[in-house]
Amino acid sequence: MQERRKSTNVLLDTALQEFYGAADEMGLDEKLIAVLSHSERRIQVSIPVEMDDGSVNVFEGYRVQHSTALGPSKGGIRYDVEVDMDECEALAILMTWKCSLAGIPYGGGKGGIACDPSVMSKKEKERMSRTYGARISPIVGKWSDIPAPDMNTGGQEMVWIMDTISKMRGELEPALLTGKPVSYWGSRGRHEATGRGVATCGLELMKELGKRPDKITAIVQGFGNVGSYTAKTLNDAGVKIVGISDVTGGYYSPDGIDIRKAFECVHSNPKRILTGFEKVGNCEKIDDVLFIDADFLFPCARDGVINRKTAPNIKASYIVEGANGPITPEGDNILASNGVMIVPDFLANSGGVIGSYFEWAQNLQGVFWTEEEYNNKLVHIMKGNFRRVWDYAEARHVTMRRAASMAAIERVAEVVAMRGTFL
Ligand code: GLU
Image 1 (cartoon, protein in one colour):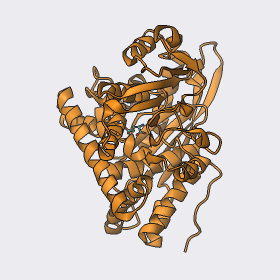
Image 2 (image 1 turned 90 degrees about the vertical axis):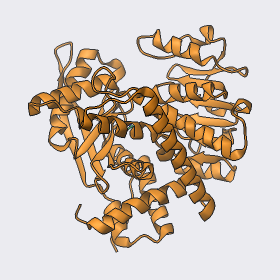
Image 3 (image 1 turned 120 degrees about the vertical axis):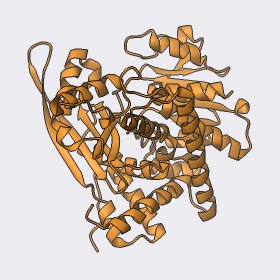
Image 4 (image 1 turned 180 degrees about the vertical axis):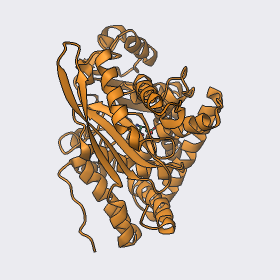
């Protein structure tokens, strides 16, 4: 039996140990455990960028393909100071389970660049994105590995990367990556898809609990792409959002935050942040929204925010993970002993990659769906997947995280068993 992997990187170790735990509970064959606990490809690239002041910075970039068992590896590209190979691998593993659970024909991948995009000009980011695209070009493609936006990246970055690779290959490659702007091969609905999916999971959970949305209070931590559309979708369904936050701090209103005003505030700011929202939004500025007394908490900012230190002070009874990996294993244990129910990230935020699949499928056919068609299909799939995990958890008396892991691993294992270990 091959020795099991451990990592000093918390996110990677969490992904590995959750996999081993679920695999053991399912009685998965040791050979499959060995195969699936390793990534097929981990590449590192250097990205020399001429900065606006004439100096040259060499950034480190990564792309990890954890598994292509079910299809091309799929997953975002993030720009963040904390990006490294292990973080990308952890997130790539998560993508394998996310795509498997979602029922879409993809494996898992993730990439990124270690950088601080908030201090870079648009031109610097363009040069960095294009060079990164050129460097990863040999391993990405519509049938091999399909990138998408992730933390601090969006349609603009996708266009730079796609444009560079298309020029290198001498033909347009729209299905090479997803999350493109609507005006350039993107899909209406993709931008809002992750948040819409997170909120849908929250609303389905309320239904299971027999609670009406208009009797529920919620906190949404993070007001970027995921958080803002999670808050909006919940709010539209009648949920009272009592706290929101972003890099500028937390905002609290027991009467309910005006989400429309929060969108206006963010859109009127070139950095797309909530600067000064306490004045226009008529709410109180606070340090941390995590500890507000509310029914539901939607952490949509970044990984590791609910941990050994913060978990004991959480008052919400239900957590729906909008970000990838917002709860550490220690945090998870504390919440479990406090009876908090958690909808795991790779179910809750899978609306993004399901929406990416819709975009890719349209690009391959050269057709465009209406926004209504896109949203209806997305919500239908999210509801079905939520129910499947809920029923699986009930039947086996396990948490939703464990149930989701087991259901996801089951599908991958079935295919690896058929295809063989050389994938
Ligand atoms: N970055 C998103 C995620 O973590 C979307 C990935 C994709 O669409 O490929 O799920």
